[in-house]
Image 1 (cartoon, protein in one colour):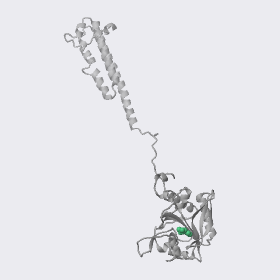
Image 2 (cartoon, rainbow, N blue to C red; image 1 turned 90 degrees about the vertical axis):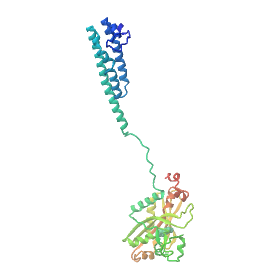
Image 3 (cartoon, protein in one colour; image 1 turned 30 degrees about the horizontal axis):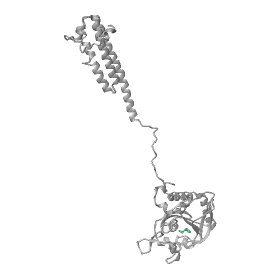
Image 4 (cartoon, rainbow, N blue to C red; image 1 turned 90 degrees about the horizontal axis):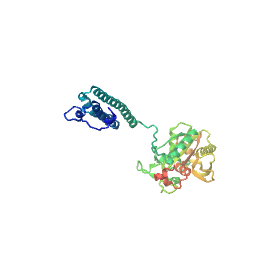
Length: 369
Ligand code: PHE
């Protein structure tokens, strides 16, 4: 089996010894014949190796293995033709060569099988894996309107000062909105409130509340004394919208009724609130004013560090007639009340130029806060 003969390149499709087959012709020289088979084995082995290495999955690998080492393959064909090699030594050598080729193919198949299975498992793991390091864009959640933000902060500040929160209905009786607040029918102060009446009951008996003060009456009638209450809510006036007015807006009412309450308590509460809500660099002032339901009455302003005074709302000592309407003896109890606009506070706080922008729902506006 010299390498010189191996390079003869003769191709034998079969070793079955058919008459005229090339192996038959060569068989006269045993060594040469064995050597003549060698290139076939080498070629079959090389083709099998190439096929096995190229097989990209387990199925393909099995197919290629069968093709090169199974029934009908060149190697099996050669093996079954061994008997036609007369020279025993040559036959043995050729048989060994074929067996070695088969074994090396088997080993390669086993090796490739492991590699392909590992790769397949790797792919499956990769495709099913959750990437715990993945960073997803945060879902946009939106946020509370600046009036709601102010409303909630106001509640927080007053609750922190010992007040309880109450709410009343937006559709009110004329009695609670006016009469009980010391504005009997035909009282001129009623005209300060551009009222929207509701078609319900007696004409003029039911309305959209023009302020949160009617909740004072409800709280006085329903709660036990002493009373420390804040009452935020939506109110309505027949106003044309402009930069500083809206027909629908929000107020927060405050009411304290206890024994020995004086105007000093009112002033102190307003000042404490101002500092708690706006910051310690803010201060408040009271200016004499008039409301039918408080006596004496005042407007209160707050001043920021930049020196600008901003009017926030009204306040005063609860009028004895109002205490009486609420079922409270004004000879035993006194109280103070205040009320101011939440929208205006949000407007000041965020330096909004025009109140109407706060209700246009333009996201370019809303997203600023
Ligand atoms: N209700 C008044 C208004 O809307 C404000 C106010 C409340 C004044 C309580 C005094 C006491 O203008």
